[in-house]
Image 1 (cartoon, helix red, strand yellow):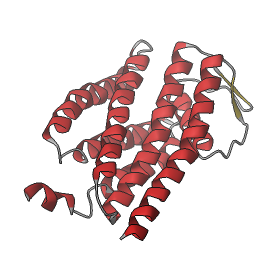
Image 2 (spheres, helix red, strand yellow):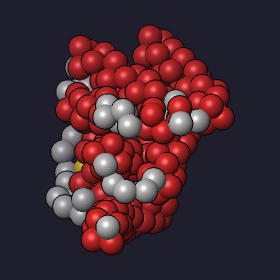
Image 3 (cartoon, rainbow, N blue to C red):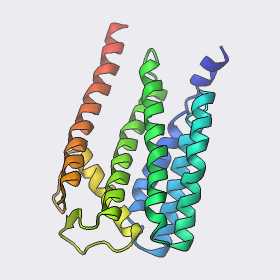
Image 4 (cartoon, rainbow, N blue to C red):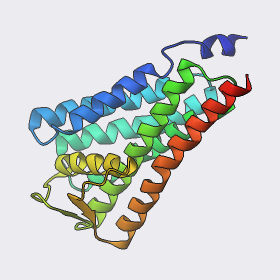
Length: 218
């Protein structure tokens, strides 16, 4: 009974959704010093809100803590020291937590019964987290193998610019808009782009079909 009472909180995923939207807006301005600071604060808020969304399960919460601490520590250590060797480590820990967060939320939503505002917010969060997961993978690929992507504009310099461009590229791919101003060059980049362009519409179709199916069956 105590768990079900917690599940009815309407703001369960609202804060995570809000922080994800703020991060999306802030990432476009991360090319300046102030913008980079704001983007780091927004990214940290996403990690903390993602952690808060796991409170319904103590085991998930414990695993989340184990992943969250190094993700936050390496992100801010890199921000202050700007050591190139720390970049892939910071990206990797953020990726691990984001993948875990998205997977945990997806399983929680799938196990719920009738759809509520809470589960709808959660589904939107999972969809946006998918975009950030792919963005982090693209960033890791570009850092470890520079030149994995071609740009019609000036080539980004520094992690902040790479992050800004590849978050944009990831969501353009996830939504199948495909403006073409950033192009994958290497086989891994092409394969990951293809996978994301399939996963995005498929998730939306399956999620909406599930909501409609449950609604009509009741």
